Length: 292
Image 1 (cartoon, rainbow, N blue to C red):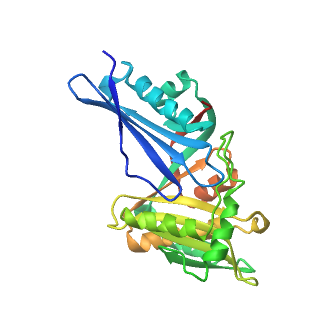
Image 2 (cartoon, rainbow, N blue to C red):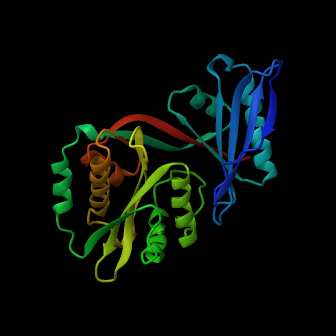
Image 3 (cartoon, one colour):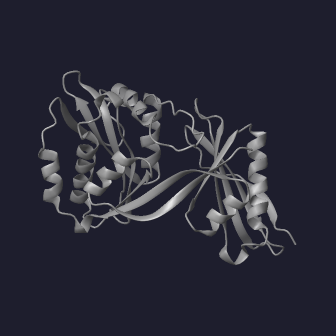
């Protein structure tokens, strides 16, 4: 008997997206799997949806994933989304499932981790002490200060040429409202956003940034979000500079944390930064895309 798929109400809305959700259950009501489809709503990404399907290991190969996928892709078509993306660890059942159902590989991501308990703080201090003529660093926790907000929002275009393989990702349009809303959403879920910014000293404008999300209780894992430098200010090792400061900050707060990061396989400069800071690869993930 095929599973029953029920659409649910999902509260996980953000200023830039909302999610649709489905639950697959057996004849006796036992949950078998779930699917979430995030619909991006901001200018530049209204064509895009992100899919996440999970099926209990004992229920795989019994049509549960296919039933959930059919429901999600049907909704993506109804919402006129031309691209649906999904991620799976390389070699996993999800990897095989997506490939078998018409998704194409569009990006390879390398995941890495840094155990703060094992770092040498002096190594990071030496990186920070190296002169970067014409630039200085600033940092803040939570929402960006008002006086920095306009140039910080403008600096987000540094992500526009980030290697994204063949993903039809669109262009994320950032403004002050969006950067404030993103920081508030992180705080609302109980985490802390720490941002390091590189400032062009003569103009006083932010030209690069590195974001690190830390658990408020100091336990578990921290997660690097975006790190990027405007094209016209690259070549000064600002990414290494900013990320080193963020790591030292995390170490001062919670020296037993682990920091996680993921980088496109063909983003050689950022992978070199991570290597120099002591990050060690853990696994590879594949980003897939379906064009409904």
